[in-house]
Length: 307
Image (tube, rainbow, N blue to C red; front, side, top):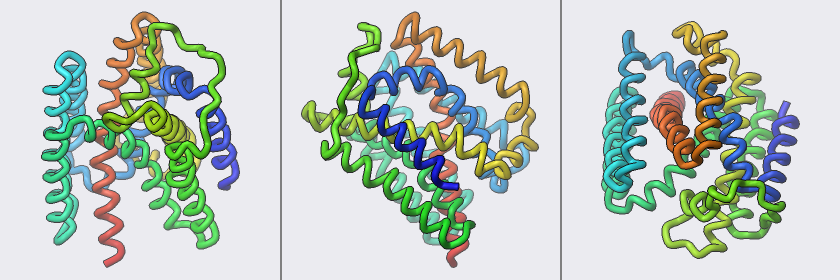
């Protein structure tokens, strides 16, 4: 059933238009950790067939290194982020060589080398692009899921995805629909300019930057909806694969861990927002970088099926 998800998208758009800053801060604090856990569980199930025996420990170690690099970047911004760009590029090239074949392997490797070099040189643009590409990963996964549905359902889902990922963001970026913020509910120590600049093109004027920020907030809300809602309803089979691989991805252990980390991150945000944001960013590295690797796996599988 598509209508509940479409209804939720309308609600997310409404909140984006009325309270974009509050949505970014409060929703992240409330369900950010939950969405990371749900995302990792689904992605492990989705990529299980390419994970070799003992590969789980290597993946955890790799993601932990990426999280530590995120923490370093809070103290040494340029050096830390450039290290993340290089480490991410190296891992993506390795994943491409492990899971892709033929022309696709070398094409993706070449693209990742170019992207990594450009990212190091133009760091601000890499950060901007990464923030928005991250929110597009669920679109690819839903499109892949819809391929296995009946033709009518598939067309409806593809139309929904077009509105979700193209039409609404374009309207927000172009300021054809604009925000009407309610009175500010954020604490004074949270600076809205910092929130906007984190996802706006480098050097953008205030109007353009706000359009990109609104698009980011909407896409982030849909991102959370997919990982927390859609994967539980439509992705149960994929989730069950992950839960058989690791007890940490199911039952009381996972939910207790989510609850504890949510309280810690939310508490840090209340005590000192930048510190809380830093903690969440480090946890988010687990999700972001596994998503990118999973995207390569899904692309490889799609190309293989069409040969």
